[in-house]
Image 1 (cartoon, rainbow, N blue to C red):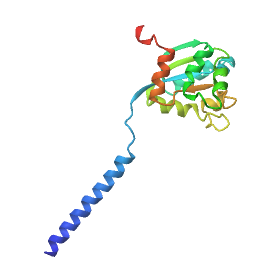
Image 2 (image 1 turned 180 degrees about the vertical axis):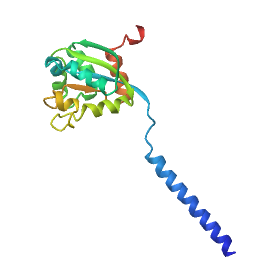
Image 3 (image 1 turned 60 degrees about the vertical axis):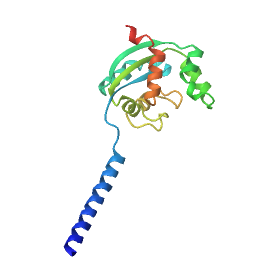
Length: 171
């Protein structure tokens, strides 16, 4: 009887251990890598400073495929629509004013986990706090004039790509 009880207890311990380890592994599992598209905007400050080519070269060096690209100038209403999610925030009007001060270059980028990868490449919104060699550290001058912008998540990427490239599917 003691041997049977020992075997049952040992089996229960093993089963509990497998459950606990499996639970924590599932909880820590990140989503599988997926090919994504994201929007990149080279802002008026970086375009004026003639950094466009260097920024695009860096995107390609980091493995991003450029699926589409154009240079555009935004009217105020378009700037407001682009930053709609920030309406009511203290910096909304400043962002709209700035994005409409000159031409911007918009790009559709594609890569494995493109959204996170591009946001990592961008660095912190404030160039002073951005990681060494990030795009904003290299080409930004302030938190609002930080050279480059990217989509924050998949929903924003889809909306922003459609905003600038509504005709993409019809070419």
